[in-house]
Image 1 (cartoon, helix red, strand yellow):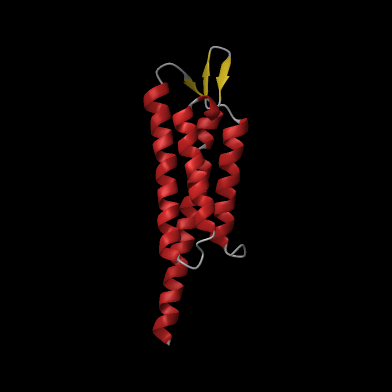
Image 2: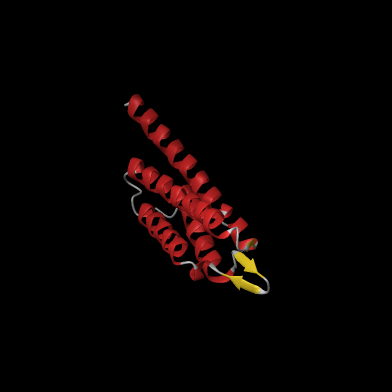
Length: 129
């Protein structure tokens, strides 16, 4: 489970999301900096993305389900980014944490690619038998 590359990228995604939620401000207004935890809707979407990614790590025997969960987690991150831009961009300026939200998205994209690669490898091994 942990020895697979896609699992490592999923762990990197989880760690980066937690660090972004806790440490990095996503919006700034005047001198006040606002973190994700200040915006409940975005916070719950990000926490559900963390939960789905964590759950998908333990679905290593079911690659289709794992790929679906990773894709849905990427979708949730996209929704959070869109919500930040649509709901809060007019009142606030974007800060570093907003741009760092692309990092877990890229980690999940790489993880999805590696899961797909594993599926192809298993399919080719089944063909040989």
